[in-house]
Length: 94
Image (cartoon, rainbow, N blue to C red; front, top):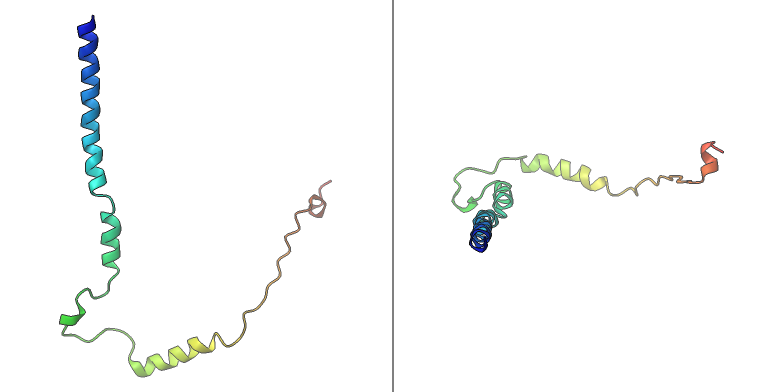
């Protein structure tokens, strides 16, 4: 009986080690998806060797757009008052 119990216990312990090996592979790949996403956000990863011009708005047109953007901050933002009265009597219920 002891040998059977010992064999069963050793089998259970060995199967636990097999599970740990799979989780180690998962930890080894941790963060790769985030790194790929971060690298995909770069518009031109090798700009020093590019032979083409940068795509975008021409400088003369961009000046007007930047003026409109900068003028939008000259006026102070509008203040909005929100009433958060949490009194039970204000809802009409008794």
